[in-house]
Length: 175
Image (cartoon, rainbow, N blue to C red; front, side, top):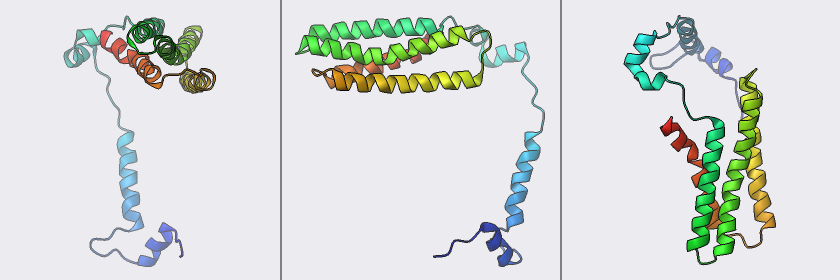
């Protein structure tokens, strides 16, 4: 099996036949898109933004990262309490639920603290690094719980983890 370079194939094909594309044809499409990219985009005026999005959408959000973490803690505690009260094995189910929520709110808390501490010089790189730390922290905590807690109940752990994780969507809706 021989693998050829596209440019070789197009140069060997000769003149373009009807229905076939040559190397230069697809290159022109690329160049056309580059020309459109340079076009200026006019930002919306305040009045246009209000008409398009509504006045409420332009107000700053009341929901801060710290408030989201507090909401995650509350959701975790309520879920752990419910699992402890209504599950067949109250102790292990309640603790499993708490550990599932904790795997969500502890990394989120560190991320919120990182955002708070870097508010003087925010950067996209810092945001991406913080998010990566949050993801790896979540995985590390889940692995730690799985390895160390022998009476683990999967359903309470995962349900509470997902509830705490979806708290972000509730926070966005409250805005």
